[in-house]
Image (cartoon, rainbow, N blue to C red; front, side, top):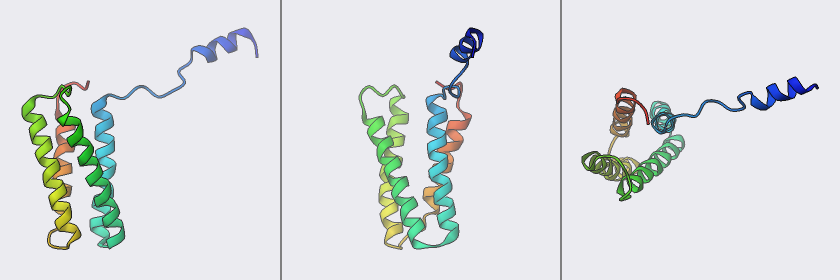
Length: 123
């Protein structure tokens, strides 16, 4: 290998472009939502419980994030996300007890995905 090849390799991009926070959030929520949707469609307990657990962890993380005093989101949006986290937690318990459908959880996630996709420029 000569010096020119070494220089080209040194300055060549080595990783994919950096994603925005919104794009990363979208990807994580989309993956969890997809698993939840597939589990609902399969109508099998084990995959559903796994997807519910993953979804609940996601919403707990979102609640912790918006409860942080240094979070830059508007207070109203932070409060709505925190409320959705509480709803998700309570509704998940109902789904596990077989007293409610998991579809509303899927609908909440889908609405969040639409919001992440439609907002202004990514940060």
